[in-house]
Length: 251
Length: 246
Image 1: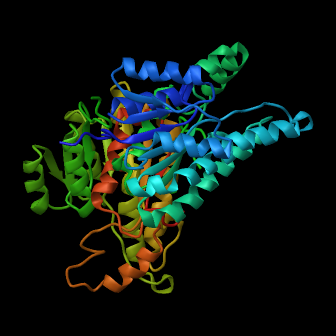
Image 2 (image 1 turned 90 degrees about the horizontal axis):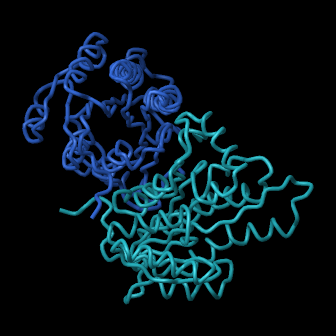
């Protein structure tokens, strides 16, 4: 019998996969037999994540590079594909954020955040379009519940709202080729990055108590939703924004 | 290898289990390890399905509120910890001619029964210390569709009920979600006489994936939403429509 979420031998590319949610996504695909291409900016970080996956018996390769760089994207995709030039799943997870109210939100913050969070997924989708068509594959974009607005995060919020719209647009374009495009919108997730900032961690735990489910998400809970959307179990789901946010937004 | 969306250990009550999507959902949930409790209006197709899946079944009319109470009590005694509200009916007529009796009946089965089943499910689960999952079968028609106004309104109601119940029942560790199917392959949408063929071609042009969904593709959404893999997902309505009506 075929296992649900079986990804045996399928080439999957996860960006921003050196830590946090991205690493959890890489683990989830790896555990279901995928050949996971790990992307992040720093090659040493990528190597560590690849080693961590291999230690768990998963198949992983390193594809470091800057996804906001058009030329780098072509190389990242080429390395992530299998021998036949196919890519089964592209997970656009890499993202950055800068908290600052509008008055002190520097143009430079805005451009950098949009570059990584929105232009990056666009560049990778374009670079991977043929490889995805060949595999009748899927794109999963990691957007955010912040697309509905979070104070002092205007560039981040706009980038994630844009990513939801990009998802819908690409779903229309790729649909006839059998390629599905969806987004996952996490709420607050209990990552190492969140824990490293004691103030932010305390604030988000307090906020999480006001959510219907009353707690932060574990990175694995985001990863399982991404795996599901990338798997054949979601074969009739495309253009959707799946909120994994403990009941927060309810769009 | 870790199996995704395993339903080992769940006992799931499925309404409308003899129908097109219901029977496929029951088979899928069973294949993924769940124990099933099936219900529908008549025993005709229900009994053989129950035998096939080694499931128990109970005939019930969802427009009879006493029968709903008895049904949920029956399921609770058998360890029910998940509920799939799948039963639904449709009545076709233009708004200006829409019969009152049809409106009442569609709202009763598609919306009121979903509330009553949800309410009684919540009572039973809370009495047992909480925990559980509900998946409602809505429809993309909640965004608007012609000549079936009661159905459209009932499914819009189901979507709102899903979100309200998700908020309210979360503290009892009960998650509530819905799947909104688009055009799905059933005997109704694809009859053997080919009478729907021209309509189907026209509809498919509007669907980004260029095809109708298989009941299996709705069932696999239900399985995910019940499973522990969806443990942080509640109040969500997953569109399983091939991208149509985004």
